[in-house]
Length: 309
Image 1: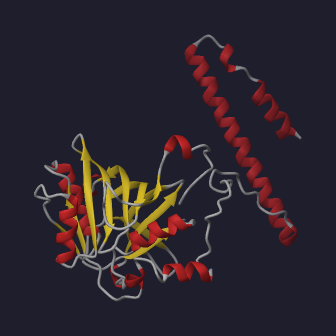
Image 2 (image 1 turned 180 degrees about the vertical axis):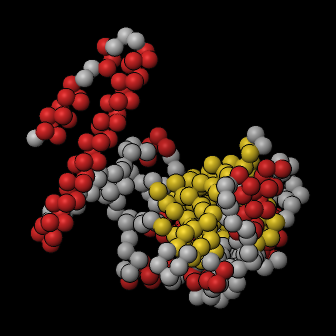
């Protein structure tokens, strides 16, 4: 009861009426500390009550977030569903998951790339084993794709730039597609990451988080097929594609085992964010290509709780 009275008194204080700026700031900070103290005491009280009640304790309250209140989507799939497994066994990435070939990625750029874009390509190459970086030499995308198929590449990634910064990723699975275009943002190079770990030549483990719809599964399978299907766990490298609110966050870490129970992660880099703009059947075709999905912001983004991946 005393805490409740104190909580009410905290909220009754009207700081905005204090005219002195310095005193107003002091009162605001004091009020903030009091609120934090009361919140901490309430949490401690709930923990003690839950511990005393044991199995009879009320269930822990789950906070409402945009993720757990997302709008229901008919395209949400269960990976264990037989129909989904049958579709995936016949899609363009099925040969990779059957381990019929070793993935080989070609990384290139738009014409006249800036040094930042070149640096990003080289750091991306270090993150993905069996990737090669080659100059575009002003060739058309269709011709570049044809040459990549002839040379035995399984995928091609073209990095676009705007105002000397990388801003787009065109990813094509060879030889039959599909082709995805992503907006590229929030690029952070390895040298800008504090206390970063160094690269090793080991093949990384790949983690794909929160790709729940049919479209999300297709995108996740495209991203997974860039990496070798047999990771070398002794290298302790892990690459993560984490989907949150249709933004795909790329992180590259190394596990650091302190003892048998504790483990830390140390970031290697680079770090960037992708957002899917379109998914096209087959290889890139700007005139006659058939699009499976295109992001139309003003028509599709009608709610903050509606997601597509």
